[in-house]
Length: 184
Image 1 (cartoon, helix red, strand yellow):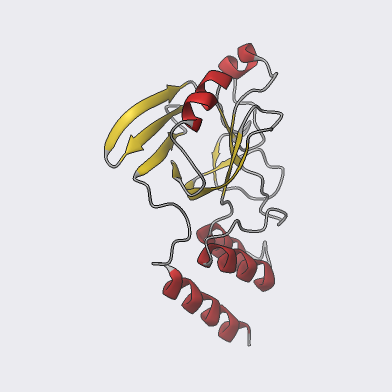
Image 2 (cartoon, rainbow, N blue to C red; image 1 turned 90 degrees about the vertical axis):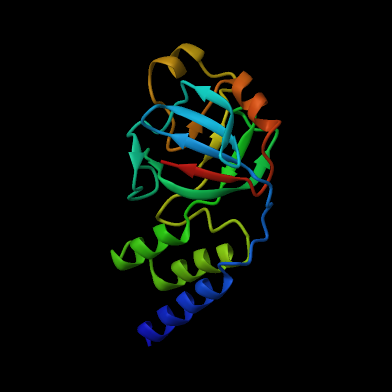
């Protein structure tokens, strides 16, 4: 039965790969967690680089659970925008993605129902559940009233990508709901 449900979920994912309810604009973001910068790209051309970004306190990689302070690597979309965030602006990412969910299911970190909910959300171009054991509420945000000196001296987030307030304002001119974000 489990095998049959998994196969059904994978068929849904495979058939929906070409369906994209998100924006199709050619502006996208490339976040380099090693160089700690973000490129705003239009197609293959870099139009701006935002330097000295901050990531999760425990670096970047595979998130193991909610609260691990790791910035997840992968491909996401901007799923929602909060212009009234305590961090000035918040661009929420469609984390966890299907690859994270697949890996977590195989490791027993999430159950089949959670996997299917994540896969279904992505197949319909929606934000996946944000309250799973994999964590959620991962995004790109500014500092708000936070300390610029701390931002410049260390990675301080719980897994998000942080910019200065000036940088988040600059970014907001380029992105919208649906913009592709690649975190490497």
